[in-house]
Image (cartoon, rainbow, N blue to C red; front, side, top):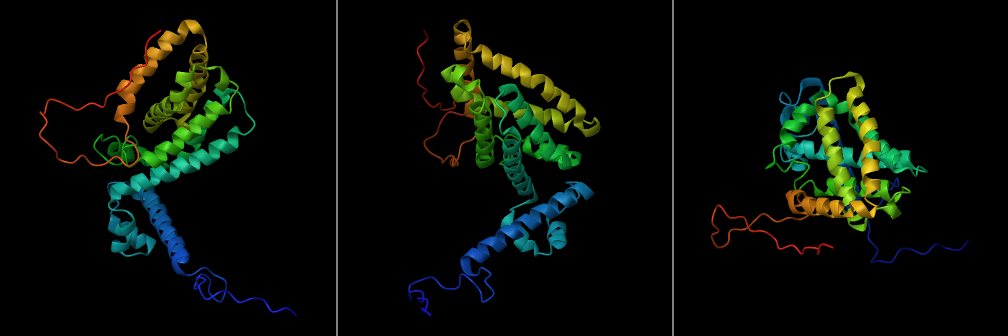
Length: 280
């Protein structure tokens, strides 16, 4: 029998235990992710049972079976649990929507599927959604979906809406400028749906579902009109307005905290120069 070669002395050791279980840095990372997920799951359950305001970090740590210090290691405050919830929801929604859209080419149907998928994924948390919204709606809060801290989750959602468009038969036909901007606009449309959903008290949020069923075909018709030459000046004006007034309010990845430099008059806000596309 040929003897199996032994690993070189320089090979990393400690990756597997005698039972084949991972050890070392890989195991530590996996355990950390499990602990983080456990804390988040526990917090979501307690928020649902007791309400957001009546749930403390100490109670969450106790229920999760971890120390208070460990809970704060993963989430700097209770508010950061909202960010964790938002991140997880976004990735679950993207995976679910992609599965549902597979094989569908109609843009209106794909858009409706993506929006309905979000409602279904968020349904278990509807009872305390208003409490979350109160914190997330603060424009100065890092928990806001428009903040720089929310960029990874927001980017995931925008990428999903890029797939909503690119996987449809409408994608090759629309105006190029609108094509570039549309995924961001569809994400903003989702934020409108989310706001409506938060305050919807109908059974199974039926009014929100009806709103999505009505507005998805309408949005598709408006987008389809952009391919006609007569509407292109209007499309360009709309694109310029969104670029000038909407996108600058949305945080980007790695946006630094402004440093103190030379004094700037309080009534003046520095603006980034923007190249204007010449009107034709």
